[in-house]
Image (tube, rainbow, N blue to C red; front, side, top):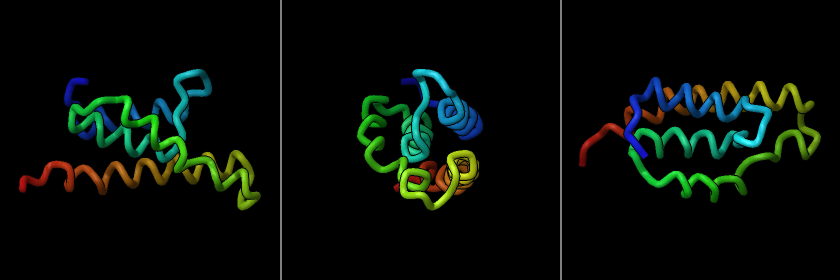
Length: 90
């Protein structure tokens, strides 16, 4: 996987999250996808994050549309705050 800029990785993660088709990923996968895209890591690692997402609407905490919007905002926020950490050198 090629290394993406933070802006490219965020746009790609949000696009996959909002995609209603077979390329849709949940909010946890979108955050992991963002990190993997910036690191140029194996995209298959994103699949394991599917078990971390999908709880808010399913538990009745929010309507599906409200949960989707909350998750979209969360993914955008995480991308903005995670990318400086990914760029740090040891």
